[in-house]
Each structure stands twice: as structure tokens, then as C-alpha cells.
Length: 281
Length: 281
Image (spheres, rainbow over the protein chains, first blue to last red):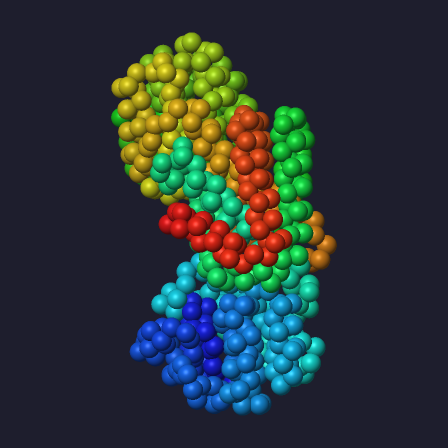
């Protein structure tokens, strides 16, 4: 197991990882950096982390695991800094939501290439900041693992074990497959909720939205409150898969709209029954 | 307050109303009917209702409030039976999710017309059957009230008070406005989730969906498990509003897809910021 862990970017997710490590592996020392000095001071004062560095990165070279928790378009500079300051036997992982772009960035950097095993924990909250971090979000959630093709099986195993100690389940998947599947199961649902909240909030008939919405809409609106920078980066780094997923969705929505226009109750019901039988439980 | 209440259709929602009445108004006697005799026997055995009738409707004429809890396309026969068996001073309400069609059906029936005040509680669960009923779903939820234009203010007030004793908040709204707004805030989100679950479940890359979905997708998939007959009826009785809402949604989704195609990070981010600032909390 790792002795010293470095969290590069201490927002809601980074802070949640730190808290989960505290609970499950209390002997591990936790260090962090962040562009927001206030977050680092808060986290040290609350004992979420043991110490931080914000410029000279003197904690970074003590650590045997570095977890990158910044928006995807900040990976280039993160990896530059990590490469300069880390000790060479350290391993690096991350929590980024798209993988092909990240693996491409990492592959450009030979000294990092072998030490990097990507992770994507399928968990989170729509809230931001270390102050909203929560150790419980990892319990029983899936982490998708992917590699540059240059890391050893043994190192992949160490990263898998790390997540398992936080009570996560893991699955290994190529970056390409990851991005294709997630464009459907995560990126598309978020985009649908962004659009839905946008058109509803612009509707002048609706003076007090709370009065006209049940739990269904509230679940969707919750998705739409996710972090803007993170989602801009996800969209930009998985463009072609997301465009295909939107196109597939639009075509199906059009067909269903045609069924409704025709008012054919049997066909509408058949469609809903067929879909329901397939739906996850 | 009412002394005897009749629940016409004892599914999950009817059963939940009965349980909520038991807790908040223990002196009220509750009667019910349903096409499923097993549900009625179960509910009587569990003391959710005091008694039931299934053919001769001898409980119906004891009741001073009748609550219709059947799918919308079954209202015609429900209202026929209620008209034949109710006592003339009783009030009638319902829980239907579209209102214009219901008010049209009611208006055709002169003797019912004055006694009917429509209700739509914006609450529920995706589960069906009285066995899954739950008194707690009404706590703090909104009920939209609408009338045929022929009921007295005093009777409207009695129905409003009934829902308030179940700890609901109420808003009065015309059937036309109700159906326009709900096509956006409820019917559209459900249809989006039906389509999303359908295309994802047909995706051959995804062998074990649970491994690739976080909370966001699960919230949406939950919507898609709603009752099929109920949703077929909602779609058929609010067709033109739903078609307009889908069209508006599709146009906005297309525009956002164009932003993504262009890869303009500033415009994508601006769109997400603008939308987020408007989003409900």
C-alpha cells in the first residue's frame, strides 16, 4: 500500500478522496496542492490533509501516489509540474471523465508514460469545493481503469487495490471504449438536463418553477448544476462521441414524436413496454 | 372536513392517499374500489381502508368525497359509475396528470360538472400497486387545483383544505395552463428518459450497464420505469403541448450540437454558465 499520497487539485472530488483515505487507511499521510490557497489551509486545519505545498512542491517528491484531480484542460500543466518534482518510482493516477485525450497527453511525456494508470470513479456530486467533500461517495461505486499501454500489470494492480480499499469496484476498459460508452451513459444525460433546464427557465408562463415540478424534474435539474469548467472540458475532449450520441438521441426522439403525432395508442404503449422491459433495475 | 372518503382506483397513488389520510385524519372512514380484488382485500386486511365494494358500489353512496385514481382513459367509465351511485351532495376530485381532457370529459356530464374540482399532486413513485404505497410522498409536495368553471368557491376551498391536511401546498391554475406547463416540466423529462434508456439498453458495447453509470443516469432511468398505461394516457391526452415541447427541446439540442461541432470552448462555457445561473436550487 502507498505511504504518502499527493492530491493534485483539492476540490470536492480531491477532498472526498482525502477523507475516504483517512477513514479506510488512517496511516497514510495525505498532501495536496490547489490554485486556491484558502482550500488548502481549510483542509489542513480540518485535518483532511497533513500538509500542502503551493509553489515549490516539496511535498510532491515525498509521495508514492499522485492523484490528478483538475479539469481535463489543465492536465498539460499539471503533468509538467508533476514530472519535474515527483520521485521517479511514484505512480500517477487521475479521476478525469474522458480518457482518450488524457492518455494522449500522458503518452507525449515519456517519463510519466510508464507511471500513469488512468482512473475514472463514476461518482460525485454537483457541488464544488473541498468544503462540500464527502467520504461516502466512493462506497460501492465503480471506477473505470485504463492505461497508456506502457504501465506494468503490477502497477495497474496497485492502483486497482487502492480504489478497492476505498470500497470501490473496478473495471478495466480501453480509453476509446470508455469515451464511447460514457458519451451515452453520462455525457448525453448531462447535456439533456442542461438543455431542459435552459428552456424551462426561459419559459415565461412558469413564474415559480418549484410549484410545477415533481421529483422527476428535480433529479434532472440537479445534474444541470454540475461544475461548468469540468463540463466544458468533458464536452471538448469527447466531441465526436458526444455528437454521435446526440444524433442518435435526436433521431429516436423524432421517431417517438412522429408516433405521438399519429396518436396511435397501441404503438406508443408497445414502445413504452419494450423500453421498460429493458430498463435497468 | 369529510367523514367518508371513497378512493376510486386503489393503486400506488390511491393507496398512498389512504395511508396519508389515516395518519393525518384518523377519524375519516376510507372506502375503495379497484379492478383488482386482491388489492382491495390486501388493503382491508392491512387496515389501509375500512371497506371496499367491487360491483354494487354500496360504499360509494356513503361518501362525501370521491377521489378518482385511475388512468385518464378510464375516466369515462369511472364517471358513469360515480354518477349512478354517489350521493348528490358529494364532491369529486382526482389525481390525473393532464387536465384539459379530464375537464372536457367531466363537463359532458351535467350532474357531475358542479361537484368536480380537479387535482394533480406533483408527487409519486415509479412503483405500482397498493403494496408499494407510501404516506410520506405528500409531505410538502404541490397540488395543482383546477375546475370546470361550474363549481363554487366554497367547494374549491374544501378540496384545497383536504390536500392541506395531508401537508400539501396548493396552487390554482387553469386546465390549459396546467397542460402547457406540465408538458415541459414533467412530460418532456419523462419522454427524454424513455428514449435515453431505450437507446442505451440497445447499445451492444454495454454489457453490464451498472458498471458504466453514476447517479446521474440512475436518476433518469428511475423516471423511465414509470407506469406504462398511465404514461400512454398522459401522452395521448396532451399531444399537441407535448409535441411543441419536444420540438422546442430538439431545436435547442441541435443548436448546442452545433456549438460542440465548432469546438468553441468560450461559447460552450458561456452557454453552461448562463444556464446554470438560471437553474433552480
